[in-house]
Length: 381
Image 1 (cartoon, helix red, strand yellow):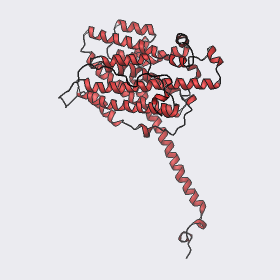
Image 2 (image 1 turned 120 degrees about the vertical axis):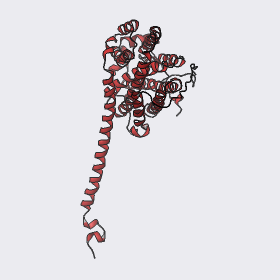
Image 3 (image 1 turned 120 degrees about the horizontal axis):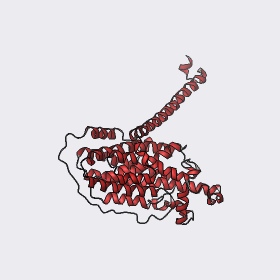
Image 4 (image 1 turned 30 degrees about the horizontal axis):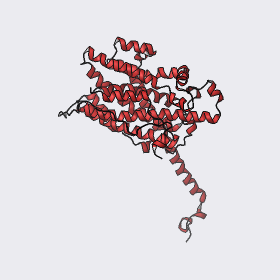
């Protein structure tokens, strides 16, 4: 079924055109490069995988409880609207929320693919071009997987959120080569990682857990790439240039914070936009979720050298300043370990099934005995 037939709301034009600016940069230095970045490039090549094969698409998904997350995570929970809803309507609401969340993941991954391709084009260093090429492939795979999950398992999509689209547009229209790193690798990817992680760690559904764990294993490398490249580059910038980038981060963080309310879902259930915004703002779960979503962004921004007074004050106002001391390397290592553990468990289960099948065949043969064997096996002359 065409994607446009599955949208819960009219997405508008089928193509969004963002005018490009800035230079395509070639480098004639093909030898050498930063050891850390070349090692990450090698890891990016080694860790390529096929979403058709690594994901178990045979797993069943109930579209009315696709993620298995608690009802408290929905803004309507505990409101008079929720009290009046039937069980069928609550299931429909769960379907819409899962569709909305994974649709934003899908649109964000397409944005990441385009930004990674833009980095290949504009970054001046060959080692960064090499790694960005592997990331472009990663993001294509992620978009493929999220798209398939939404089409085949949920059967519904939502258009891109206005705030996510605004940040993507600002990132892509900027002519400075480091801005796709900052907008995508640090802000959008950082926020997405935290959102992926919260669902991965709370869902009891095996298919979304697989998808999120394997995508996060890739994203851990992508954020590491952005940190390496920007940390080196920002050491060379003037105070004025650093402040310009901090202003971009502040605006982007407010946009991303306001993206998370899911007001579009409530509007689809007949709730006026202004009231839907109020309901979302009063949700205790959303307030906690919003704070935790910055657990990847704040330490990354601090690590790359953007930590001026105005930026710090913005994080104080958002209630996330203390997250600047989070151990980002530990979080990324855990993302990789979870994916590897999930692989090990799946492969061990498959091996046990194969062994049981062989043992069953042997037992069946033994029970058959000589009477069911051929003449030569029965010792007949």
